[in-house]
Structure formats: structure tokens, C-alpha cells
Length: 260
Length: 260
Image 1 (cartoon, rainbow over the protein chains, first blue to last red):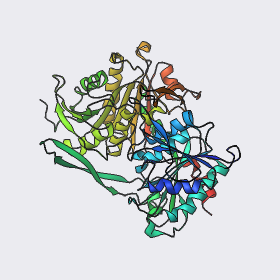
Image 2 (spheres, one colour):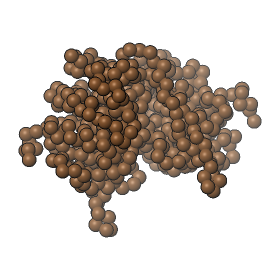
Image 3 (cartoon, each protein chain N blue to C red):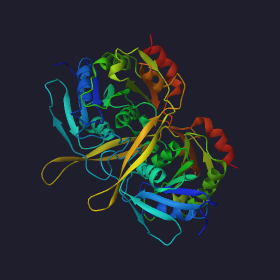
């Protein structure tokens, strides 16, 4: 076993749950780069965004799903809970890197807002740790992550070696496996795309109404500098993400409108 | 009853739940400005961030908690679910304004990320509707919202009359009631403050470990242009918020580091 003082400490999280194939692939790659501790949800947490658990208890148990050298904990909370619990209750020292994913499905464009995977990475950045969220544009449980892994390793090594600007993390998305081999990496801005949503309204066996959220993703942003453009053209998209939500461009106008 | 074609349509949401005193105060004020529809969680949803309900059903029932002219629905989901359900399943037309709150507790600085109240406003902006989240720096259930209401009305009227830049909403916070009368409005950036967190580790009656998240809020941002400065000095803080999370300042550096 490597000495934890010598190798970087890497925290691995996700939102699909600790048994998801995407996180197993990510763990395998991270084992090559450092000492790995996995703290991930014990059940799927897709769409949880930056939710934290305030009104119920958090549970966290050591688990050993495979024979790898990593330590693993399954947590009852959200992805953000997992990162906080790892940093403040489970680990002896601050991790050198937080990686989250590999998510099954897109976190590009506005999906970054809803994504538990990306919220774990944002939380890592808030804790002052270089952090990366990885996602593959394939919802299938048996999707192939093979083509992603060399890029996962390259980007994680770069983050370990060179760090990240304070207050930022990376949102990395991979095109569908059918597009592999990927054309390379494109550093992008978040596309101004959106979900056109509908609710599927149904009646339960007792005659009461309930709803399912459904929707279609529509990209009306025709820029060639966006994550959606990169992914559609076979590139791995990398968007640097900030959690300073201030709309700086509109500060001046609001100053004039609201302050006499 | 006013004709819905003549008056603005205002959607009201929150994260403390439909019975919270803060939303009742907000509804009263909004009834003066337009026709009001309330779609709010049937139970507290603090700290839910931008979570959406994907793996369980959504319920939504008409309710009549008081004698006001507004229509009200209690929803089983998160604040973001409430806004989506209102816009795509309950309302005949797109609202002219989404207001969320008045939250019991601060949504200033990084709290914007965790806040269900603010996520409802961000979701309103994503739906293309001028949107505002309001919060009072007082967690008490019986907090007085009196000093907030003239500012709530002023800012809501300004949004109704002048609209908002696309892709943005407003994060409005009110100092503690003890600081009233408030000194006025300050348009601000989000302070670079943080939570220093700890977990309170306990044992349940069956000897199993569980955790509660606790923490102290620390502001090391000494700028006088921040929401934290404004609130500490008796001003109502207004931060324009964007959901484009791209860290534009670091795009160039990442381009050099990751693209050969």
C-alpha cells in the first residue's frame, strides 16, 4: 500500500449512487493517480442540484464493493452532503482533488444547475479544493466509458499538477460513445440552451392526480464556442465553472433603477 | 375580481412551505400589484438548492389558507418543481413576475447556492420570467416582515414595469428587523464568504452512528460593494444573479493548459 503522505489524496463522489458503472470506471482511473477515498450516495441522487440535508439525519457506512485499494463510504445524503462529510468528518486531511461522476447523462449547458454530480464538484471548489465533474452523454447503465478514461486521466493530472483558480471547478462532458475516438478537448462556455418542459398528468388507482416532469432539450445558441457545439462535433467539452452568480454586466443598470 | 387580462399575473413560491409567515406577508403585498397564484411546497424545503423531482411522483392540490383573492396550490415537490409545475401545468398563461420568499434566514453570499428560495427565482429566470427572491436575516418563525414590505413592493413594481436582462434574476436580502428602519437599497455583488462546517456525530438508541451538519458563517471579503457589507450596515442588498456559471476569466488559461 502506498503511503498516504506521498501520494495525492483524491476524493471521488457522484450522483448516480456508489454502485453505478460510471463511478467504478472513475475510481479505477484515480487509483493510478493517488490514494482514493470514495464517499458517494447509497442511492441515485440525479437532479438533486446543490441540495443539502438539514432536517433529517445523515448516515455513512464503510463499504467494499470491489477488490481495489480505495476506501469507500456509502452515504444516505446528497452529493453535496457526501463532499462536506468527507472533508469535515471522514478524512484526516484535505483532499488534493475532488472528482465527481462519471455521470450517466449530460451535464452540459443549463444541466449544470440541476446536476448533483456537478454540485459535488462545485462544493469541492467551495471547500478550496481543485474539483472536476465528469459526464458521458449516454444514460444507459451499460454505457461504455472506455473512450473517456484517457481524457479523465489527462484532465485530473493537469488539475493535480497545476491547481485551479480559486472559486472555480471544471465541468467535463464526453460525446456519446458512438462518436469515439473523440476529436480532442475544447475549452468552452456554457451554451444558452434550455429544456422545453411538459408535465405528464396521470391518475393513481385511487383517482388522485399526480405528475411526472418530462421535457425536450433545445439549443438555440449557435455559437461555436459552447459546450453543446463541442459535444455535437465530437469534442470533449471543458467548461470552467464559478459559484459567484453575480450578474456583473447588469450591476450598473440596477444601480440606476433601484438606488435614488 | 379583477380581470386577469388587465392585471399582471404574479406567481409566488418559497422554500419554507406554503404556511410560513414569510410567504403570507409576500402574498399580501403582491395582491396589491396583480393577480396572484401561489404554488409552494406543502412542507419545508430549505437547503434544497436547485433540486428537481425525477424519481418520484409530484402531487399538487388547491388550498385556501386565508380569505385573500389569490389562488393557491400546495405541491409535494421542491421549490423548482413548484415553478415548473405552475408554468407548464397549472397556469393558463406565462406569469409576468415570479417572486419567492420571504425566506426566513439569509440567502446572501454563497447561501444563494443552497437556497431553495433563490433556486425558485433562478428557475423563473430560466423560464424567461422576471424573478426575485426575498429573504430576511431572521430565522424566527414569528419574525416581523413589516420593514421589508415597502421595499418588496418597490422592487417588484420596478421588475414589472422595466423587466430584467435575459438570464438573470434578483437576490434581495433584508437586514435583521432590529436594524429597521433600513438605510435604503444597495445593489451589490455576492460576497466571497463561506461556511466553516462541522459535523455533530451522534449515536442512535441502537448504537449506530449518524451526523448533523452544523457550521459558522465567516466573511473574509472586506469589499464594501458586497451583499454582506450592505446587510451589516443596515441596507437592503440586491444582487443580480445569473445562471451562466461559466468562469469567463479563466477560459484563456484553461485553453492553454488543455488544448494542444
